[in-house]
Image (cartoon, rainbow, N blue to C red; front, side, top):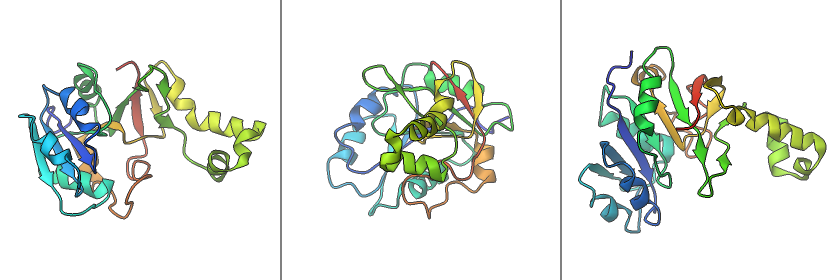
Length: 209
């Protein structure tokens, strides 16, 4: 079982004033920790307007993983729900994630993500290979082989059932505290991107949340 069924929601910000209010407004029933990475806009001021939000105001940009570790360290023993500052959370979604993440050894549970127009945002993926990288960043992606590689890479996001997947993006994920502590948190040497592939390789994807 997770150590504490009540998660702390952690949002890492950096000049996020344009989006942070909508994210925080969607979390009125949750305790939120905003870890700001030295924003120079009004992010911190806007976050402090919410009574359920605690703000850690950093002096410099530590990077994503290191900032998450700061937030987690301020709330020891509690499960962690990571939300990007541009994510709007549906009512009941975090409670459902917590319900599905109570059985060890499940380390991470993630929701299906939707774009603002309701279309699917690929959030669960197969591991990146050299072919996948080339298909996403070179003209190879326009070929039949490149398209097959990209389809395979995104395939786990398409399922309509709960499934085990290689990894999910850090835009929205619920982390069992035992799993987080077991791997020592995020590796701070990953400044931004790919830190969500490192450390917790087996996760659960829950659709329609």
